[in-house]
Length: 297
Image (cartoon, rainbow, N blue to C red; front, top):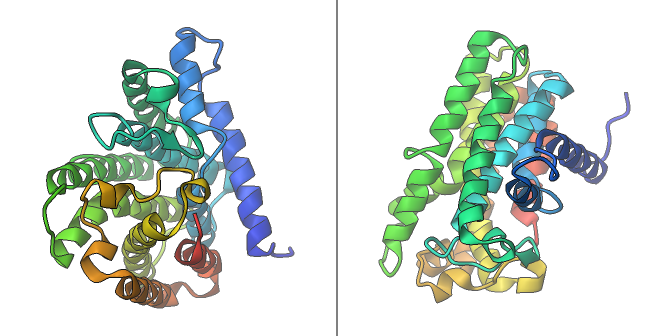
């Protein structure tokens, strides 16, 4: 079987994820129609789908079935979509632009946006709990992993630290803890969940994937911080310079732009080295890591 070039694989995977999400979300015509329409608005039609790409790429390491990966990728992306809806609310980051269009609470209203986030989160676990997805014991492990990554010891906890840190200086370990939770936990979950969809891996392979996932989670945030101060709003599809304007600690504000770029390169090298036990089966993960490192939006 001919292996697709990365750009073609990414486009095909993104298209497949979009179709799977559209099929998994409630129809906009179903009662309550306004909520369902807002759920679809917040989830479909935009985004890089980095987390689903990582699910599918990690699935190649464990020879996972595409059908299983598709469900798990949707679950992870629904958690991410919910987090963005809540992150944009006036009580959080108070942003008006996401993926090049009005944020959910601007297009609809705050109460609807709150319910959209709640509903997307619960739908993610509904998908993961689908009977016959995989071995029942492994399915429970996957549900627990995604729940942990999303909660107070993961993404939500990182957001809490982020809100508390506005106007305060953080040192690098404190900043890395915040982003390991806020951004890195769900990215790590995407990698580990993708691998869990297939055959069991040996300890060296599991440890390598875990280290890769943690480094790539930090890399994503460092690049995000760099782009926030170097790219335009039109390119990013969200408000550029928002972190600096809000006096939020970032890798650029802590290290400076050049040092932040050096750190991104260091994280990429660490991530690549961690995949050594997985050999050529991790080729797609290496390509996704390069995409994350060199992305322009």
